Image 1 (cartoon, rainbow, N blue to C red):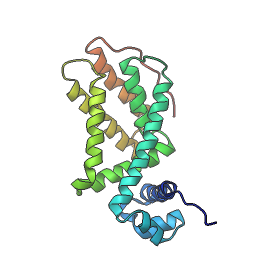
Image 2 (cartoon, one colour; image 1 turned 30 degrees about the vertical axis):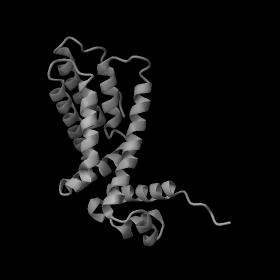
Image 3 (cartoon, rainbow, N blue to C red; image 1 turned 180 degrees about the vertical axis):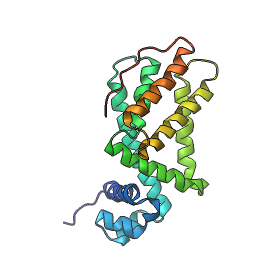
Length: 202
């Protein structure tokens, strides 16, 4: 009997190859031919699952999103029941920062996709939706009357730290200290700082 192929598994294999190419060689190196070579499959097979480069990039981003969500879920679960808002935010943002090799690879792909969509607004719809949901969630955890603005600023800090981490400008320890300092400013202003976790080497 012919071997049954799982389309999702095959698409994920190709998306992983795309992410390796983007992370190691840059977005300009992403092409059907290069991705096929990295995946060890034919160019025709890549084209069977992804008709355009936009489709390949969007699926790769969905894989990054799933991995990031898994890291966040694990980090939040480690806090136990009913963590304080500051602890929850710190754990969530630290899990999203590129602090180790796997998250750095994912971060490079996410950054490449962001640059890719800067000149392709139609490809950025998912990013806009995710960003709005994340801002709303973070705002719900922040004190004060300007929670939306504070949430936007906190997430902008997260993205900036991510870029500097990917560029090697900050160490993980420096990035986490900057995050803790910013959270202190937000929560101490309203007397809700809570417990500050230690910065551990990564």
